[in-house]
Length: 111
Ligand SMILES: [Zn+2]
Image (tube, rainbow, N blue to C red):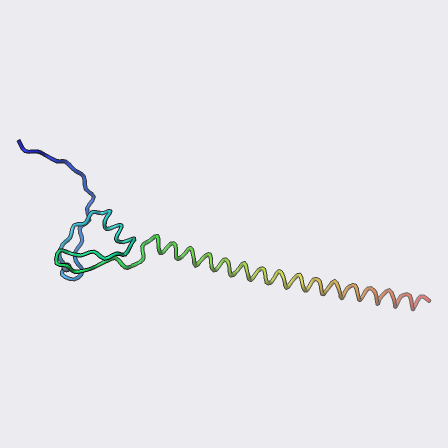
């Protein structure tokens, strides 16, 4: 009586990018190589790897760029808000000086 082993494996069929040898990789192994970009070898010794960005890496890069854009817009708004405050302060100063002169003139005309 022969022993029987029943197993479920998640495998991926791919090929060597240099010699075309068919390779069967555990799906988890392929996933890790895509994430860590480390080299692996076909049976003929050809090195290869997945060097393109993963979906997660692309999304992270996009997120970082969006954060940088947002930060620049926040800084721009802060600079504009500061300029508005300075303009308001100058306006209030000029308004006070105008009112003083107006009162002085009214007093001179009144007497
Ligand atoms: Zn090969």
